[in-house]
Length: 412
Image (cartoon, rainbow, N blue to C red; front, top):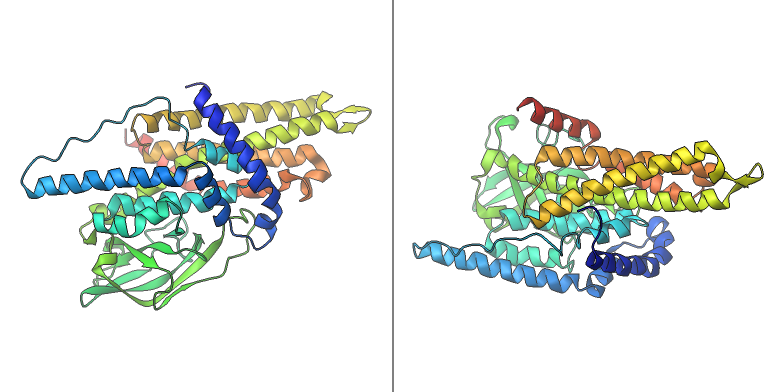
């Protein structure tokens, strides 16, 4: 695809109106006050029927999985899965991300971690009972979710330096450890906690397991929101576990037998997160460009609008090139998704590397174009510059993306 179709443009325009009416007026309170983003997100899902669609999709998925399980118990072949087809509806899940990111990228992060990373972990690795118990409420945003992998001493070396542990205790497990930089951590109702199984073996040889925790469990503490550079509308916190006892029903899949020690499933989640960064970057770039074009027309220096100066024109032109390139990456994700093809880790890493850098560069150039005004919080480019930077850090730093891309090339 080379442009949005009529259906997609209708959704974009409706979403843009919602953001103008519901997000923009609350931006100051979301960014600098005590207003978590969750009620606005729920209103958006309800307004556009996204929560109802999520319930319907979930019901069909569970019905199909139960039919497959019953068929296997009878020794029969499971019913054939319906083929996914491409076409018209592609992009309808991407457009809200782009439009929200024009004003409030943090809201997308909060929503994506809950409905995306956390729910996807349960839907991909959980039993049918676990999906019914936790996933639906996350997919509809009736409950807030957190996906907890990063630790104070790990950062980019998420698995190698992971020290959080699960130790067998009777019929269940005792969980210990801490996590940091956890999106939705302070307010999460449901948390997927990733740790290593301690069997007395060296840490490098331990399996990686996923457990589902509920707010208020004994020994489970969720910190207050941390102060940070940007993405203020996305609450970030720390988690502390001190001998938190969980039954086997909270172990995702209810089995310790996991492929590649449990690392493969987390990498699949990383791919999903990284490809989504392109849509976030596009929203930031589009808004910066629109603001800069208007400012270049209105701002007069040396007797004429600054848009008539070649140095300003060069900045605008480079922003437009970045917008076109990132938009093409987003269209690639839309088409691949419509065809039922997931991005490889290397593809998603390449997409994240380029789009995150492009968004950060465009946002910083927007501040430069605005001059002293761009440094003031009264002008939105200041916020977008702070928000864009984290795209180069979370979900894997630029340096980690380069490693994944290069390793894939060298294996060929």
